[in-house]
Amino acid sequence: MTTTTPPQTGRRWGRFALHYVEMIIAMFVGMFALGMLQSAVGLGVSHTGQPELWYLSMAFNMSVGMAAWMRFRGHGWAPTLEMCAVMFAPVVPLFPLLWLGAIDADALMLVSHVAMFPLMLAAMLRRLDEYAGCAH
Image (cartoon, rainbow, N blue to C red):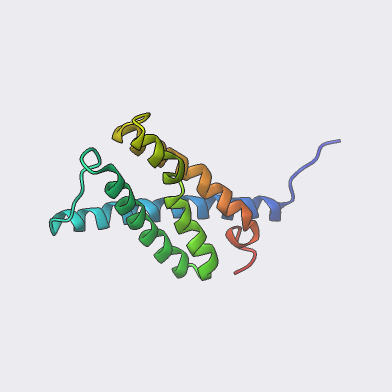
């Protein structure tokens, strides 16, 4: 006896995956566009010279892009702000490690970027119906 996934289940996970990819694109668009604007007006920050300020600025820029896309897609403020919080969450364990000298600015940049992806996924799974397009 073989079991198959009902078509609506496949579409549900397809919508979820598409939304995840859209969120990543929006995050990077915000990071690059606002980062270039900051640099153009002389407000750019070096990730090695001022790693904390660099990270907070980058997370803010990512949040703006993602929040704009989420609001465009019809999401409420609660899930939008949760997703923005995910952009800042990696600093909770990483800043103390940076201050103690256990990691450097390059490791902060690498680990924080990598950590955002599973954190975003966890936030989205928490509201599966919303991100799978079943409820807004």
